[in-house]
Length: 341
Image 1 (cartoon, rainbow, N blue to C red):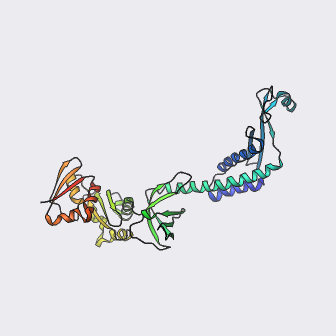
Image 2: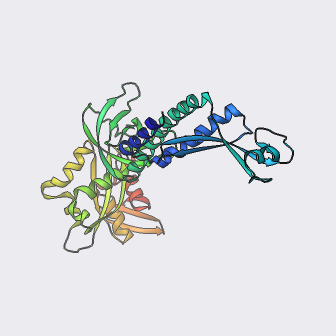
């Protein structure tokens, strides 16, 4: 059994990336627990696994005492001297355990621990892989669609993961085999529960798509300063240029809207307002209320302002059910009071 056992450890390390030392440590603990069940919980036992000699041994340890009160963990000085004259009071006497049940115990314990170790090792490897992609976009393939709750099982290249219904863009539908982009929100480092939380409604999805699709953003010439989003309906994204000769809004739109169109298609037709960021709160708020034209912005507090628009621009500035004003307020971090002249 020992030889096959160590071959299995080598294969685990090679194929699954689970360190042999990690598995040996786990198996030692499992074997120790197994033999203690046979010899009693008070027994002092030691498990020695030698990967070089491909050997597994179990020892019972007993302390040398004057008067034995617990034979499971104590031995008299007289008995110890009979084994070796070197033993003195307080020393530990070790005897190798030879039992017909040990082979069965060790095989069962090793098998159980290997299975558990594989699961833990694979989960940790997947956790590490997802952690390196946290707050990034990954492209995944639709593997299964749950017709009852609407959840989508995705093949991410690292593992299978679930895109929950409430993290999907409202109204969007999928087909098995379709490739979609998802945002890695959170990675669960615990041993149980959902491994990763994926999203298509998080504002970070739009931000990362712009960073991936717009060369000027990749080069650091244009910066994304903020994103506010109501998924499936509208997004406002504020951009700013380090170079006065580069128009940040034009760079994101591209010739004939070619750059922005790909992002809109991926977001299922979601409207995107690209806003020019400004250090001036008044200018920033006026831009954020696009497509409405603003007459004036007056700061009424550190984070609040009053906006004046023409009568025919009022409904456009507020937006359907207040959406335009709401997104502008989130983008700028301002409380915005909109009035017609």
